[in-house]
Length: 176
Image (cartoon, rainbow, N blue to C red):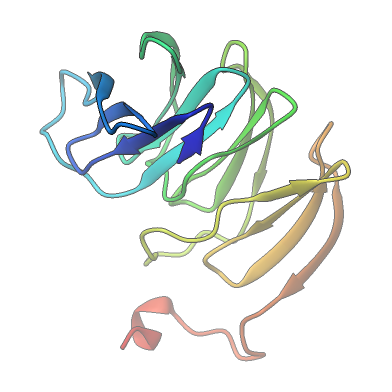
């Protein structure tokens, strides 16, 4: 991602780095693989707001970093690995897990504000669309095909739709 004249990256070893956007010089780097885990994972991503870089990982963590120094501000372990980059708006971090659960976290300390669950599937795709946020509404797309709009302040459902066909099948049978 690009913010405040810096390029922020995350690699498959969960190393997050900041580079000067004009010169390409490395400003800082931080390794975020938990001590209890093997290096390398799939999933997660980066977002930026208010001088902070927010990181989601395949190790089921959401992490807030100081964008100037790379120092960890807070680190939050969730139940299941994350599959998309977080979305951050107005000091709220929206993180989507592989189990189709959306977490709304406080951007200052990582505490859960609310959660919402979609239909959990036995087989899931890695990656996906990050939640979209605007005008007090967060729209989340789950791997089940559900598209759901929620109020940002409390997670109350506003509407729901589905982009999957009328006949529900197991994801394993539809992968090509």
